[in-house]
Length: 252
Image (cartoon, rainbow, N blue to C red):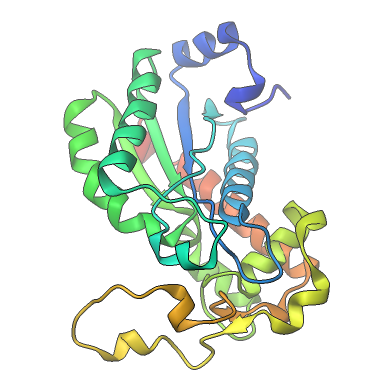
């Protein structure tokens, strides 16, 4: 099977993809601290892996190509730990717009922005109307772990969904990039096990993760293992593939 990854194809291959009306999956992620046991690239590793696996499942039924991952996002809340890159809102919007504009200029008509970082969700929701108004695209945006939230829960012990550097992300990293996981530090990799204290307030506020969880973890990575990671990755890939094949969304 020919690669579904934009970065592995020739310009000629990509012109052919545009001609067959391929859906362009655009992974957007982050580069930020993930506790004492995981690398800062977790969201980028996992988002790209889910997008590739989902596209490979879908490509027999619908033309699809996975664009290069936008590895920087909105991560101010992690900056105090070090190791983190972050955009401000105008820069993030401008960079994402440039990515989408490039895709549109090459003749693609269908774009699926797939996010892998919770801190990006509000910004992407805010950007979507402007992108949809400016470009003649069938354009959707999702967060892969929210799209598969109901199916992820069956494999989890202490949580119902993805938190941060937690049971889910740690298990998936043991599959996607096992050489980067510091297993000897898993004993320290837990935090906010009794819930986020901010949720008791009737209004939102900004807090650094360092003030909320000294470990940098939300959830319990001590529950992580590679077998669980394979199941979680498969569920996320299947959820993405099903969405890519949804003709009510994308047409033909």
